[in-house]
Length: 320
Image (cartoon, rainbow, N blue to C red; front, side, top):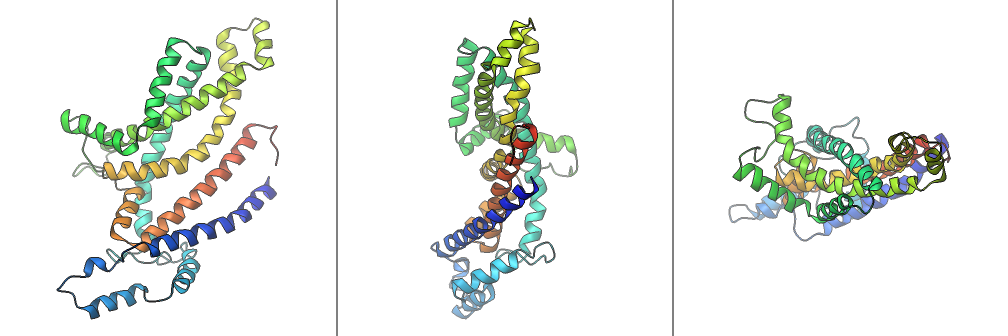
């Protein structure tokens, strides 16, 4: 296993380099510049040129890339490794680290809710295949999976915040209630629901398929022929084996949650990493955009690696 992990990490190096090159080129070749917002009649051309030199945008792109990429990986030791924000001049590393806890709250609670709800739904659909309950749940799953994140978030916000006034419109905490866990959960309700509904739709379908495959195995027929109760067959023998493929979804879902969180955080003004990245794209804040893209790319690579490792851990038949 150790050699497999090392081999996968070595294989990830060219992928990370490729992600960095593509993201760097896209960011810098996109029309517009970070200094465009300063181009007003009151700002002299000399000031604009000084800003361009200050940001290092006057250097050739290969030079800018080498400086950025080599400095990027010193972030554990240098708070300026990811550069300084063009918007407020703060170290990008510190800005991102300050937003990570909020994103972890949102994605972590969403994942927990997804697992708690999706697994029982998938099991119910499998043991009652083609029943009315299965057909009704499948219809709602299809609708939930097809709904755009931003639209669902706006509808929940309009209904439960604006019209019914049950939940807050935006933010992480009410005024003067920082650190209040109940207030935090109150603010989390709608963003978590937005993310969880879409994830539950996918997870429950996957759980249903996995459970149906297990229920058709010979050892399940043997367990039934021995006179075991249906409850024992389903929950003691079938469910434990059906959950093995689901474990791989944990590693693959984290990057998906992070990408969905970017939209959800923007809709609900949730002060997380996703909202920061969207603001950075709007402001053409190159250092913040590049840092968030690299974090997302590394998370996808690690998520896939963890999924493969978890699959081998829970299923002894898998060896690397």
